[in-house]
Length: 538
Image 1 (cartoon, rainbow, N blue to C red):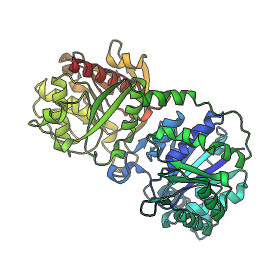
Image 2 (image 1 turned 180 degrees about the vertical axis):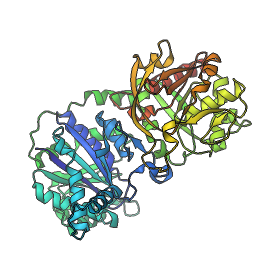
Image 3 (image 1 turned 180 degrees about the horizontal axis):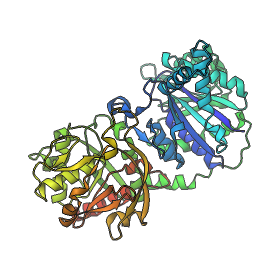
Image 4 (image 1 turned 90 degrees about the horizontal axis):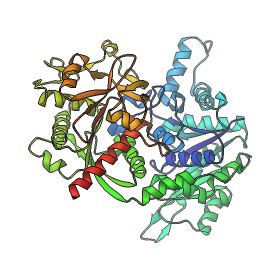
């Protein structure tokens, strides 16, 4: 029988429910249990696909093409297990499902209400992954904080769910804040008490409290929290600020969070968690033997979460190379031909990030021209790859004003064009080319050397593609298509023959990089940056 864990948050947002959920799941997985994590978001958008990155950070894409919350990236990076459409549910999707059922007459003319119809639909989605029979434990993270108006149906659904399943089959972990007041020189438990009180008012007694803090919580404070919040002392878990999110699983293991959870769920303490490979990764991460600075040129750089998976991919690839990767974000709107050397001249490598729309695109093209001409390692992702094609078309092939039809529908040289199956689409949400697609690599190329095999799959999120009408011209001039989709003939990867590392991918490799399996293109890119840095030093 599948067991369920719900993770709620109180006091403030951004306490790290996703990292705590992923860390707990990692520890349970390391004990031999099969675990998955799902995220319930209280906003009314159907999914994050139509949200501006400034609003919500990056949109994470799963193998089956779901546009999801960025926390699913943490789940996959920690567990090395793919997520699906069922792992991220929003209020919008819940209401959409209920309204569709009402329109189809499934409620037999009854008045459709939040209770029971909306809460029943939420509970149905809470059980979907458990009912597959693939998981011993399903962890459900509830977005927002207790007390938010939009979160109320989810909290009520958890209350009902816990009552239906029984105390040993469903538990609630409440993440809360224990702030340190510098003026008083002490930690304060009152915010936690009030947060738990709010949860109790909705009929839920948390089983475990995870307390985010900047300072260690002593035994007296733990006893005080336990007494006033009606939990066992050993169920008060300290979550102190860590230098890296990847340290959190080991901190939670030290706090025995996994043991407490297994006890509450009446599950066997199979083995001690096997975290040796994780410790090895952390050792390489914290003790690098070299260092590089890599620039990321993008248009959403004010919010690092907009490029979360890229940042984490550099962490994985850096650890693999025993190299500290210093990522420097550079706003593409601030890059021009007359300042490009000043902006990029100190870098050991450059990644041009994905994005949509015309804002900042010329800055990306100017940046690519500089690194191409100066043999600086380059990696382009999605629009970054497309910009490399535009730059090469303009400055090497002499195709004046070459462009993408996303920016200029009437361009004389549409080297990047809208995909045929996208031309009649009007709805924006969930209609791009999404999810995993195959790609065949050419032997003897940088891409083939990175992957070490000919047939790969990668995740996509785009509407525009390389225009194959120009393929021969580009290949004759030295930009080769080293990766091709075998079904659609879509150019997936371009690279330059006579360059230390110049690779662009139409797909999003950052979405498949995990602690256990750093993405090979990122690993090779970081290695190329290390080599470039050595040559600069010499």
